[in-house]
Image (cartoon, rainbow, N blue to C red; front, side, top):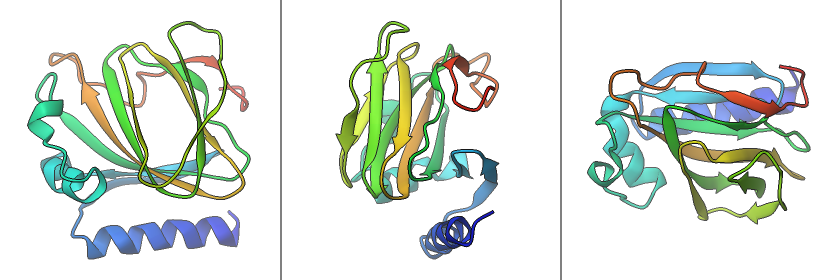
Length: 165
């Protein structure tokens, strides 16, 4: 792992600790960067800090929300993907990132999002997060759409992937 990547992850870990968040999973092994998963009990606290006080009760579809921080390396792309059991909301914390969305498998144009900008992704909507010139840090809340079967990392349908997954 590059020193820069290690430094970015340590910085985010430190910030989350200072903010009082309980990190339940940390993954630095993704080819595009990685993520931190925050305790679901802290969803409102997370929304207060990272989504300007968005009321999590307004977001709940099935009663379960999963907060995460995504870290995207420069010049890398997550897979072109969608989900059967979740919708998502993203808000850029640091850096400028690219986002592509579509209701079909055809990829459209890249939209740039800068810190403070957010996007909502519907269940089934194709989407891709892209690291541009700098490291991107994005807060994310998963909105689980199936109460009987909450979404997890296996709920990813990859339409295209730069890393052959």
